[in-house]
Length: 348
Ligand code: MAN
Image: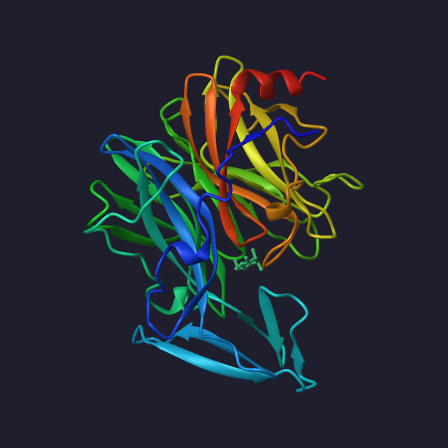
């Protein structure tokens, strides 16, 4: 099933639409944007994944050094110690490296469809040892007069969730890692519930458990506790291998509506929905049996990593969700969804 109305202009942003951060880098993927409204415009905080142009027979992989400079590591494809079977990650002598280095870049739009890079807004790069493999997939929650950013911090020692705060998108208060490894896909609710902040997050438990969705609460956005697992993967279904939150849940009269991604063992990423109780958001009232959106278009089926629809950003106006998503881990697309239609789909 697929109830998304894709933008006719899809893909709305491709790697060739923006300039690399350095002359000797190439943008391979422009993907997974956070979305928000600011200055009467729609903005996306895009993930830009870069690497140097590749030479035949080897792979050139960028990482940040402790001094914030980019170091290029070279691996030879005929080296028996190299596992390069996944285009996103390589393993060399038991150590994982990402094939690209991601930073975050702002684009804005008057109509929510045609985006451009505005002057005067700087990209956000990884900083320090816990971001030496970059920063990725930022959710932007809007409340209390500011923007609350939750994103993936990647390094050789960890994949965890970072938090930063901004009011003007020019200065950022980076507050470090709020959910330790292995954790990603964190979205903070846009308002408090019974006086507390809530966040969805996705720890991974490799031996016992899996890649499940959890919820945590906090008095101050810094100390998070009372963690609860709210949804697990479902054997033999489209979300059998991993699930993770999209952007902040949408408040509806029936509950908090969360659009989440689910992947199966073949790494096919679809979207579904969860409905959470308004007052006790750790209680799941309903969950999609079938996906509400799945990779069916060419740009969703083929690309850097095909068969992927991944969302972490949307803008809501009345019943209409303008949802932005990464397709095939390579380009940015948009789709409209109706809240009512998603809620109806949960009743079957
Ligand atoms: C997975 C994928 C990649 C991502 C890494 C690190 O391999 O989601 O896109 O870069 O994790 O988070």
